[in-house]
Amino acid sequence: MVTNETKNSKSHLQSRLIRKLILTSVVIVASYWLFQSGNQIVRSATIFLAILSGLVFAHELAHFLTARLFKIKVEEFAIGMPPRLFTINKSGTNYSINMLPLGGYVKMEGEEADSSPDSFAAKSAWQRLIVLSSGGLTNLVLPIILFAIALIVPHEVAIGRAVVASTVPNGPADLAGVIAGDVIQSINDRDAVNLPEAARLVRIYSGSNIDLTIKREGEILTIPVKARRVIPAGQGPTGITITYQAGSINLEDGRPFTKEVSANPISAISDGFRLTQDTLLLTRNEILGWFGGNKPEFMGPVGIAKTTGDVATGAPTAQRAISPLLELAALLSINLGIVNLLPLPALDGGRILFVGIELIRGGRRVDPRKESLVHFFGFAAFILLIVLMTWKDISGILSG
Image (cartoon, rainbow, N blue to C red; front, side, top):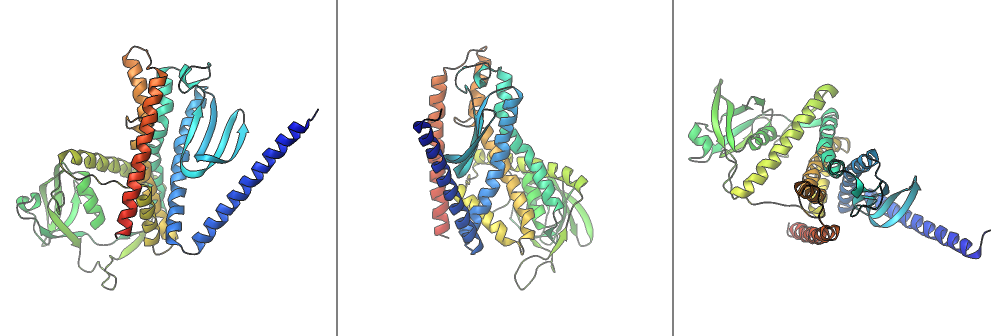
């Protein structure tokens, strides 16, 4: 028997669904119009949010799949943050798309307290550790694929090796005997094919002695040089400035000449792995440099969106922007993975820390109410940090 109350409830749900569909359509149409109209800010934001949504989806999908693997009941799989646009319920799980396209979450039953055999809290410590760490680890593995695709897609690379323009007096390179005019061939036996690659390789090996192979007056020399991790202001790790070889620069616009390249899929996978490893080394060197006196530099969502737009518009055509955008996505994924695995409250790493404390205490768990309070204040601090970084980004853009 269908009562008036049931009819009203059904009518109310239909009205809410219609309103959400209309709102979603308006947002999509407005965004598309602004994107097509050439608004640089909207284009940058759209591309950035598309990349971020993909990375978040991969992160949350890893949590979801590992939770289902251990038969943990997943109450909701959401992309974006509330308010909710629409949701579909399938097999007891709500699959939701939310309005704010920053982040996402997987809500599992009993995340704080053991409520049933299918709850998160009812599972063993090692199962919970796998579920909690799967998202961050996925973000650290995903760049291998992203870098590989970026290498396979036809893209432009600069032509012309790096040439030493000058050396800092009494700097590591000067003391080792490097002089202006030396053409950099390789660093630690890795081909420095152009100027960006030479600069990147030096920073990868900062904090150690590097074998700098150079060409001087037709002769090939290998010179050991100290690459500093703590870098004095205005200097590089080795104390040199570099420029492109003569004839490698377009005199009309000052940009280096380029050529189109594309890697084969087999070598691209191994190169993607190497690039991911290199990026992790760069991140490690950057963090260790902070403790030695290097000034940390952070960027919030607005700054990252602007960088995304610069990468997209810096390519001569939309097709040429695919490879650099994939590389940027790989870098963002690595940063997302590292940040999520840090032992900070409200993040995956913070929850992993509490499981670790539980293991140290012989299986005795921290009071769920105390843990929830720690995560609450951690989340509040995290939001405040994002607000401050966003303000810094906007101030920097407005000030040029």
